[in-house]
Amino acid sequence: MTTTDTALPSFAEIRAARARLHGVAVETPLLESASLNARYGARILVKAETLQRTGSFKLRGAYNRIAQLDPAQRARGVVAFSSGNHAQGVAAAAKIFGMRAVIAMPADTPAIKTGNVKALGAEIVAFDRFRDDRTAVVQPFVDDGMVLVPPFDDPAIITGQGTVGLELAEQAEAANARLDMVLVPCGGGGLTAGIALALEAMAPQARVWAVEPENFDDWARSLAAGRIVANRPGHASLCDAILTAAPGGLPFAVNRGRLAGALTVTDDAALAAMRIAAEHLKLVAEPGGAVGLAALATPGLDIAGKTVAVVLSGGNVEPALLARALGGAGCE
Image (cartoon, rainbow, N blue to C red; front, side, top):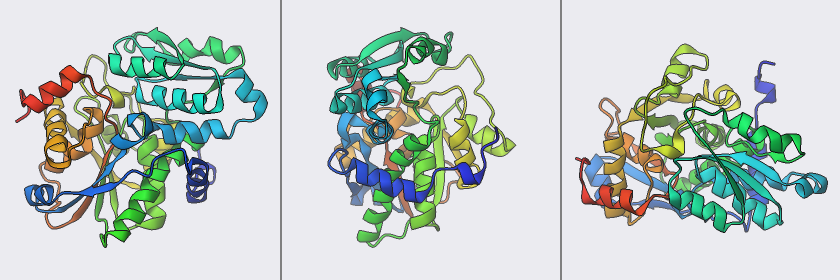
């Protein structure tokens, strides 16, 4: 069935999600650095979702989805597939509700993320991200009655993530900042869609850009084609948190008429952005979470004199990779 505008999640649902998340999710700060402003010749505001519970924005959508399950569904538990951050969000939300959680995770997921999921009490089923169909991996658990909590293709997930945009708009207004542009790390598109919906209502002048890794430019190509276009096989990236086969159907329906476009950044640029976050903001970011910051240097992107918000979406990074970023090898 074709998704229509009447079926899309709404700003009212984002407000309802915020009420559910009150006291559960952290209202993360919107940070500003004079040195960053000088570096880019613009007013740069950074939404620090690295400081969220579980180290990324993903708790918001996962909790919003699980909070709306009825008691019988909660008794059967939840299952999800994730490269790590959604896994941690689902595991944390399930723990809050005292539920069983099973997470299918790629075998190459950074150990810090699998370790965190296990520490939250969830069970892990490993799969090959390039060879296996992740939906097929979780299907036996769904057949047994567990509830699937998808990473992005779900209205409750999108509206939960949309609370990032709601907070961002309020915080920018409190800082006397009129947003011109917002740069959002984008994999399946749930965070981008939620933020686009929130800002359409609260800061309609702001142009929202999706940011994705080089060779994983499915959003750029899909927006240009007006239809969902999958990523080309055979590529790899350090930005594991935002590597998806193709845009989600529901996020694409939301984003196609609301985004200014999509930008791509290299792995080296993401590593450099991790170092910039540490040096200027004293924040730890993972590569996929830092791509929005990396996109500030995109050739041809006109940010001079403008107010630009960047979502720093996650900070769950292996120590060795963080050391590589901070050391500067390959980061210039």
